[in-house]
Length: 308
Image (cartoon, rainbow, N blue to C red; front, side, top):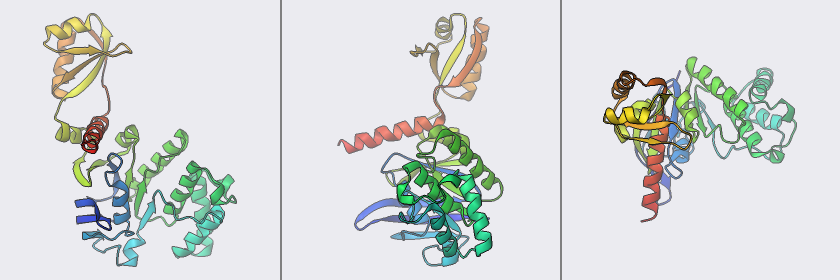
């Protein structure tokens, strides 16, 4: 098991500061990093993995810095937008090269290469040159490289991008299994439904700073307040019952009634009130998952800032 920590980290490129005052501690589990484009996610992965030194602050793996100590850096597997693969070499030769870099013995490394090829559905592409692969296939080879040495910490920058739904689901299940066995996994994604399903906790980056961190519903409440938009399906005159109960409502194009309430407790009271008004309530569900509300708000703020 390993703990990844960032203490008062600032980082950037030349005179451009991208990350500001980042403080994080990641223990075993699946941790999701979300934020609009330009929020600093990719830079965060480069800093946390030991590639880009911070201009201020410290990154630690179990108390050691990956920017200066090789054993700390080797505890991290990174799959980023730039996969560090040789385009003229085949998939399997790339993995053999990285197995040597990781110091894996030749016999065990061949077995391990076979494992990661099977995990990512790459057996049929093993002898293909990386330069001839599609974006999604290249993404899978980059993930295979990250998994190769079974590092205790995995940093995966948008790993689901370019994967088909079946492969994305298999990868999600694999990540959850690794977390259950003590691995620390930090992954970014724009697929908010997937993030909600996978996350032990979510860190929101906005403008290079941490805007919030926590379980999705609690994070939404902390950043946006505690109101919930609920979609209601049932029998009876739902709009009239809502008006009698003092609620404003709207009808979506697909038919369901949408109403806003202050909290989960208020939702329970509303359902009881509807039943008391003779409405047969079949379903009450959030209009979006909690992360979507947070993400949409941040996108609007970013757009407003860019147009000033």
